[in-house]
Length: 438
Image 1 (cartoon, rainbow, N blue to C red):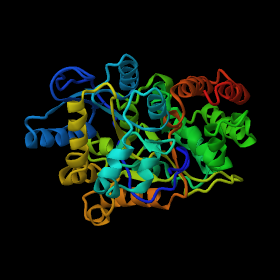
Image 2 (image 1 turned 90 degrees about the vertical axis):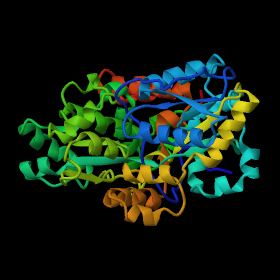
Image 3 (image 1 turned 45 degrees about the horizontal axis):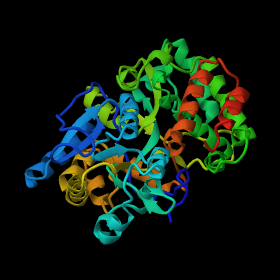
């Protein structure tokens, strides 16, 4: 039986969620049970969109009579689109997602299929994947989604050239972070880039501060539904430190109007307008593809989030996404479900896809890829990600995915208010305590 969604020890492997540039449709015969063949929705944007589409194209070429038709969406609009489609009984056959709280809601409502017996009948499919990837796919001991793609810890990126120009070293503690802020601001360089309009980007900061100050048990209490868990003293301290950084002008001016989907936050880092950025491991592929010679020229630095003085959290722990997940709509026809399962067996993480993820800077959730990682063109980064993932005693799932959609929406709304300094840490805690367990 899987461990709780927000507490997983990662046994290996990592990186690649999509942030994107534009909505695109690759053609669709309609969601749910209508039309011929299966349908599949996923996120757009380089380099992940091409890797996902390539897997489908290879499957369709090998199975011309049972094709999959795809449609792609930007990250933030997708979350709304898929929730609406599932609620209306119009979901695609294959539902791409992050597992966790959203999957739990769909499973409880009977909107996605229970795949437990299918995995039991296909042990080779399950055995090739790292065991920890099944945590967010498992609801009450049953598996409702196929783990896929890569593990994605959150990483603290920095611009080495900017650090050299200012004459400072990467931060080794929270106090170092606060000490760096005025030094960068004095040079008219934003200490941190942030796509704050997207909300979940702000959340990554709180995830690490909660963990580094109070340990993984602080959020675990929220996930377990403990009364007033958000009022834990460590949580209040973390929220206060967060606002201290904002008040000190730690983020790019106007961060609340910058979107992650536009990749503008990434551009601020590689153009040197910001010194640092806290973001998912998928950012490496974006920085490499869109940042000119920023990566190849050696200007990109990266590290795990540093400890906080006096904190009790383990600095080797990480947060993010232990994988991505493919569920099957319960409204799909029997034929469409068969196509989806065939894709899970022969299309997901085929040899070409594994190579493509590694070439993009990702670490697949597949067992036994160490040799490929060490020999890849991105060996330093993927080895770093592998170490972060494999050495973390706790790999906590992103809060907005671990919680129910209702609680997650309240969380994201209040994070915006916290970052705008329009509510206090205690008001934030009170507002979130009100939706614990909902």
